[in-house]
Amino acid sequence: MSIFKKSLLVLSLFILSACAELQNVVNTLPGGGIGTDPTLIANGLRQALDFGIDKQVSKLTQKDGFYKNQLVKILLPQELQKVDRALRDLGLNDLADQGLLLLNRAAEDAVKEATPIFVSAVRDITFNDAKNILLGPDNAATSYLEGKTNQALYSKFNPVIKNSFSKVGADDIWTSIITRYNSIPFVNQVNPDLTDYVTNQALDGVYKMISIEEKNIRTKISARTTPLLKQVFALQD
Image (cartoon, rainbow, N blue to C red; front, side, top):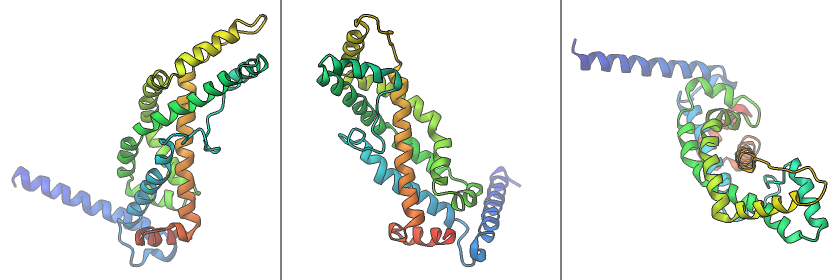
């Protein structure tokens, strides 16, 4: 047998095995999966996540996507809340407001880097993942996505946010804020890692927005806007 024929045989066996595996998953779902294509569930989950990314994450990349969204707005870390109060006590409200605004601007800038990483992770949803995600809690698909992307997104976001601080002027503003605060007599000086803080806050915001769309699709029939979503998520109702 030629190498080509052997390779073709191995590939065929793999495809048959994978389809059988998903069929077993489908057969354990409510209704026994009667009439359900073996690939349907995974495709439906991919589409739900794609919708969440397109509809919700894209909002975060727009101006005020973080800053005016109370669900994900980045607030000051505890260490800097005393800095904020001290500046306002000194009548430097504008400086304090600007510092908070620019933390959110940096996050909005960084989230633009997320989509390619998400697309890759969504594409990799396997047959084995399908049942656990579909029959899991309202954020099961989001949790799956977070597990697959968090490390890669942190590595991507962190340098972007660092550059964004310079791009939006946050580094200059926060250098000024922290310098002013540290010059106040008798205060405990601060030197926070704002890049790490904003990176993690941006990631939290991204997953929160995706989970909102996932929950909508799971709990509201009206949010299932395609035949595929209606068919797949009817299995978990």
